[in-house]
Amino acid sequence: MTFQVSLTPSGRQFNCDADETILSAALRAGFILPYGCKNGACGSCKGKVSQGTVVHGNHQEKALSAEEEAQGGALFCCAKPQSDVVIEAREMLADDDYPVKKLPSRIAKLEKLSDDVMLIQLQLPANEKLNYRAGQYIEFLLKDGKRRSYSLASAPHLADTLSLHLRHMPGGYFTDQVFGTLKERDIMRIEGPQGSFFLREDSDKPIILLASGTGFAPIKAIVEQLVHLESQRPVHLYWGGRRPQDLYMHLSCQEWASTLPDFTYIPVISDALAEDQWQGRSGFVHQAVYTDHADLSGFEVYACGAPIMVESAKRDFVGQYNLPADAFFADSFTSEADLAQKS
Image (cartoon, rainbow, N blue to C red; front, side, top):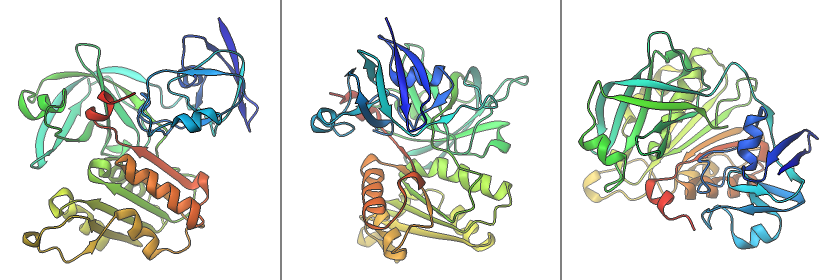
């Protein structure tokens, strides 16, 4: 059975099969709704069903609570229609210049950036190219049908090789392989580009880049793209970690700050030990933003990292510091543990 999905405020419509998620049907029809993990863990695709009914597949309570669902809230990545529906979601037309592809790739380089962060560089076949926007991610297609998503850590004009930053999660199905058995020249299948987190190049607003941990990877791609575009937009990069070693490309960020015009770098550490001799900013990274900027009404914010950081930033920036909701762009990083804990 097929149902009609109507989008507000745009008024656009598309068809969705009863056994298909609304997000999948939207992407198939050429619309991009906000989304991240596509598995009910991050909450990026959250919207509202104003008419009709849907049924949800497995998802995490933190992404959509029972109370939110009772009030019409929906996660479009795991919501399937039970009737014609009207949904409230911000969307844009897909761009044919960025088709989603399944491609083979060869591991060109494996390099530890820290004790628990690995740089992977992928080489595509000579006759293939992946067109993507700075900030988007790809999925690794593993042999048993499982998928793992990681953001591209290099700008699109550097796409001769694709760079990614992977943090080791001990016991993790994929990252144990990356830090144990994976080796250079191994072949990996990937699919991408994915995600609605990417640099809005048509804006001239000053930018706040907010990262925690390896959420720095797509932020790095965005900075490189801004440099490539010779952008004149002021940029403030806030990167948070528990301890100084979590800021595994700290020196590169300092170099940006010393060489790029109107670029500010603010590292923030939450749990430094005495032995770290940390002399910089302390506390939660998103709080450092509004300590420095009491009014965010004129900014765009790109936030990437742990879900708790992203959720707290959006709540505070939009709710208390005047950031327009449509100027907050985010990608919540969900770990393999998050995927295993869906309810």
